[in-house]
Image 1: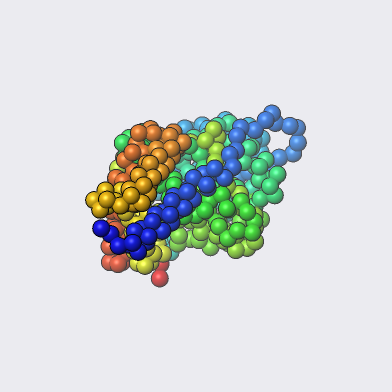
Image 2 (image 1 turned 120 degrees about the vertical axis):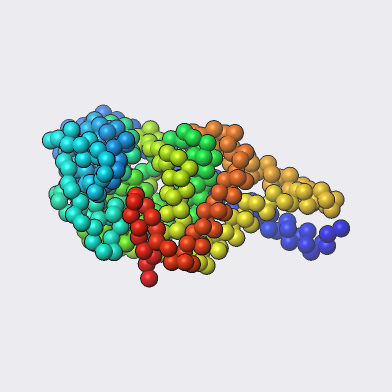
Length: 379
C-alpha cells in the first residue's frame, strides 16, 4: 500500500502534466489561419524583394521558383543567392532568367552562418520596400505573398511569418514531426507572438516577410550572423526593438517537405534543439521535462493497479486517454496519419536520444554541422 502523501504527490504531479499537455492544444486553437486572398484590387503595391538562400537544392528549387513566378503580387523581384552549391542549383536558377536573378555568395566570413550570409548578401543587393526571406524547399500557392503582405498591412506589422503545411511521406516524418509541432507551439508560445505586449518572439525562416526599414533598424542578418536558429533570433531582435510581429498558419498557401530521410531529420532537429548557444543546464532540463511530462505519466496506471490504489487507477487511466488522444489528434490535424499518434512514446524516445546527443556533443565542444558546413559554438 502506498503512503497517502505519496499518492497525493503523484496526483498533484499528474494535474501539472495535464495542464502542460493542454498548452499545446490551447496554442493550436489560438493560432490564426491565413487563407487565400480575394480578387486583387487596383492600387499601388510596394516592391517586395524575395531572397532565396540555396545550397545544393537542385531537387527542390525548381518547384519553389516556379511557384514564385506564378505569384499574383505585381511588384516582385526574385534572386537566388547560391552558397557554393556542388549540384545543378545555379543552372536551375539561370534557366528562369531574366525573371529570376542569380547571385554567387561571396566567401563566407568568419563568424557567419551560411544562410545568414546569403540572406544578408541578397538583402544588400535588392531595394524592395519589403524583403521576403524564403527557403528553396517551399511550395507556393499563387496568392501566398499577396495574402501575407495584405495581412501585414492590415496589422501594421513589421514582420510577418507563415507556417505552411509540412508534407510527411516516410515513417519517421509521420512519427516525429507532429510531436515536433507540439514542442514548438508550447516552447515558443507561438500564438502569443501576435500580442504586442508579449515577450514571445519566433519566426519561421521558411517564410519571413519584413519591412526593410525595420529590418535595417535592428541590424538585419548581420546582427544574428552566428546564429543557426537565425529566424528565432531575428524575431527576438524585432521584439526587443518594440516592432510588431505576426505569425499565422497557412496550409493552403505554403507547403514543404522538411526532411527526406531519417538522417536528415535527425541532423535538422539536432540543429534546432542544440543551436550554437549551447547550455548544458538547459539540455538537462529538456531531458527531465521530456521524461517527466511524457513518459512518467504512463506509469501512473500500472502503479495504481500494482498497489490497488483507486485514485491512481482513475488518474492513470485518464492520463493514458488524454495523452494518446492528444497525440492522435495532432497527427490527424497536421495531415499525417492519426494512427502514428499512438507511437508518441517512441517519438519522445527519439527526442530523448536527440537531446542526449546534443548534450554530449556540447560538453565536448563539437561544432554544429549543417549543409556541409561546421559552425563553432558561441562563447
